[in-house]
Image (cartoon, rainbow, N blue to C red; front, side):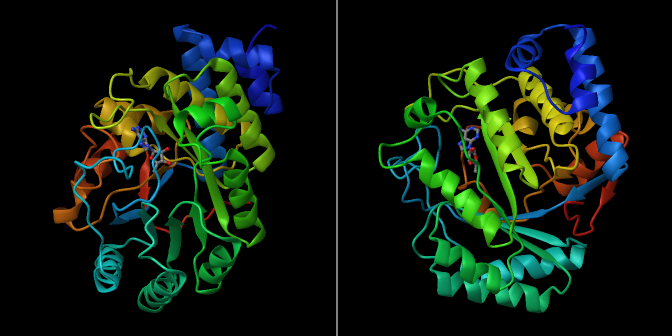
Amino acid sequence: MNNPVDKLYNTKNLTDDELRELITSDNAETAETLRICADSVRQKHYGKKVFLRGLIEISSFCRNDCLYCGIRCSNKSAERFRLTEDKIIGCAESGYKKGFRTFVLQGGEDNYYTDERMCRIITQIKEKCPDCAVTLSLGERTPESYKLMKQAGADRYLLRHESADNGLYQKLHPPKMILDKRINCLYNLKEEGYQVGAGFMVGAPFQTVDNIIADLRFLQNLNPHMVGIGPFVPHRATPFSGFAGGTVELTVRLLGIIRLMLPEVLLPATTALGTISPNGRILGLQTGCNVVMPNISPSDSRKKYELYNNKSTEELSNIIADIERAGYEVSMERGDCIR
Ligand code: 5AD
């Protein structure tokens, strides 16, 4: 094999051996070639635009118990909050006035948000904020629930698959969580007509290079509209508090690989990447990322949505400064996937 980056750029694919070599390479020249190729593909499809999404964290109650997550139900020290319907709608309206045209409603798996409630919220946001996109990130729900929320006007759904390897998936999750169920949710969502986002954490405890290759193969098969990846960041009140976090280098390398494998995908420079390094977000943007999701939740609840330690609560103005410093343009458009 002479150069796996060129091959990936030209054919959008590599063998497992080539992927393994690229993922584990600590060669600075390879990293730079990957950055240049990823940036050229991103610019071919999306120019210099970076789409902003207004993230509204609606609830930190969660019935689930993922071992890595700070809002897992076993974490009795977590402060819990949930936004009322009016608060969520008000939050979207004030974001709309600032120019946001996508709202991401994200929360723990909280039974309070019944289908009826969610549909009311979605309908009202769509009524009060015409021409905006509503993205949901509410975990696993029934096919019926996904259908009803789509009918109410939801456009997109983010549900990270977390790991495509059954063994690793089980190590990261409680026994009642089943990888097949999660994957079914993603295919259900696609069938219902959502633009779908999957993804995983980089450097999660027990994750191997082969596990990462399985994640990339899964993404190639699912062919999602969006991919969310960020470094694992330990949270002090979880069973994984003593594990090392993921690195910026590996996260950025994988972002570049994903841009080349799925050229038209919407790829956020995630909050976790911005949290572990002051230039993490900029590096991500320069290596294929074209989305940033500023937090527009009410400030009193923001610190309670603590998925991991030191979660960044960056001001919008700093985020915009980063985007411009990296050489890109802020876009407040809906920013749909171009395929
Ligand atoms: N570090 C990094 N990412 C995390 N998430 C949850 N806990 C952590 C953590 N400790 C990610 C999961 C989830 C998304 C909402 O946040 O991948 O899907």
